[in-house]
Image (tube, rainbow, N blue to C red; front, side, top):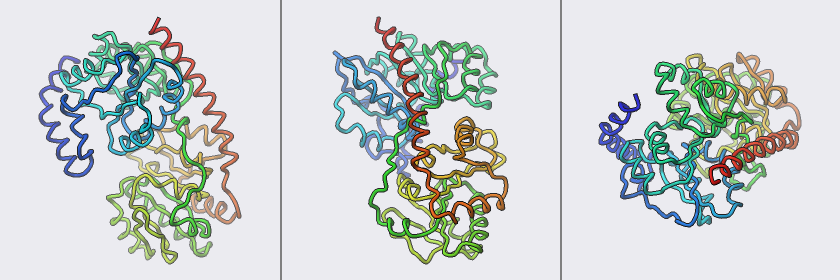
Length: 427
């Protein structure tokens, strides 16, 4: 099976190049650095031969944020430098910002997992050890790493039931791939069991490292500070089609009881903002599509966010948040969005019944009365009414203490395991 994957990765390489160029045209790729994904001449190797190179691969911004505390802990050790690869444009922007003053940390885009391209990448950078993050399973990278005797680990490994069933169709291939890892740190107990089923080595579960993601919890200056301080509002974020209608109908119920109430709505895909604007018109709700750095209008009922990367500017002021991708039945095996950032910002979180992707995280939040599952509009409206009528329901200090304890436990256990692993690799 791995052989066929290798052949297909070579066969489809020209088509994937075309796809990258199309994405560049659509502004979904970096205008210059996109070539790092498809051409070995653009790998831009800058390693120091006298230092040991540790390679972390995190696909997108969430995974990158989760490993930053681990990288910062390893930076304190002598004789190390780091290669960080990501896939998305937003994650590259974050990496460039965070690591701009670190001479021993290099960010590159992850190359296509085409056999000859990945072979050249590995032979050029010559990492001493590789850490893959979350669900980044790339067969050519794994095969070539083991052939070159490069130690290979996966941290915060996440295997869903759906993924497990797919791998079970090719049991020999699955066991060959997962047994290639020298260290496996699972993101939850379910993933740990699946990894053991596939004969993975050195499997541990200390907690989801996405709890380690650092965020700015202090209110910063922004053009809408006055509005956010003085107005009563709630947020609906990461919503998908039909969830906006659900939230807007809840908002109509709340408006009957709470005067001048606003909703800040941030869809998962901002390409849908005009569709949501038309939905507001049908429901007779006034709305504003808010672009980056624009001022919120006091006269609108619904504020529709049309920008990336600034959601926390609103959440830091919010009391209550509904998180989407949790009401859609067809996504019951792939539902939920990461609730950690709004929780760390002291928001009370509401969600639908389908949060499979983050069920253990939500369980922790539920136990600590940070999140609550809702099933219908009335239950969400009732809970929001209670929150919004209180003079102060922000729980930043209470939630912060909980997360600090969780972060310390997870980071200490994770770093102890990684330190011992690296020590054994170097001995």
